[in-house]
Image 1: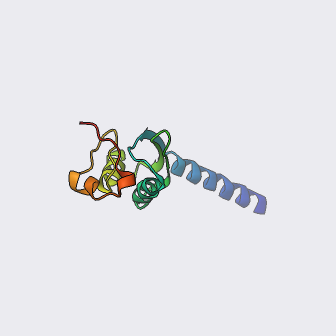
Image 2: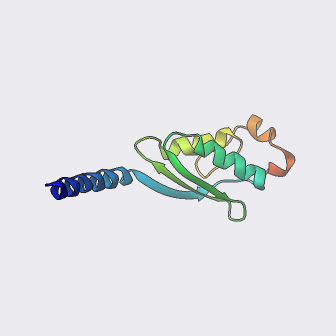
Image 3: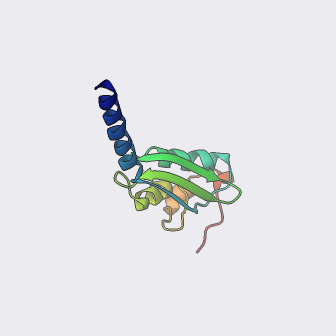
Length: 112
């Protein structure tokens, strides 16, 4: 009897975890920046969003890799959060005011 209950509980837990994992999505996209301060700013802006589990930005490739729960946060919200702290993405442009307030080493060449 104990064995049956234990197996039933394990089965239910495995179904629960697989249902949770279905909402996790990983996206890669370009984010403009230059240095370690940019990296910290970009990653913090994304990790502060509810539903984001991973945020990594590579200053050499300018690529961000973000893992998030689609049921809690939309990809457009992630792009907007990055732009809000001064960094252009493939889909969102930061305001000139915020971009101009970045430190000199953080100012990347902006596309027109």
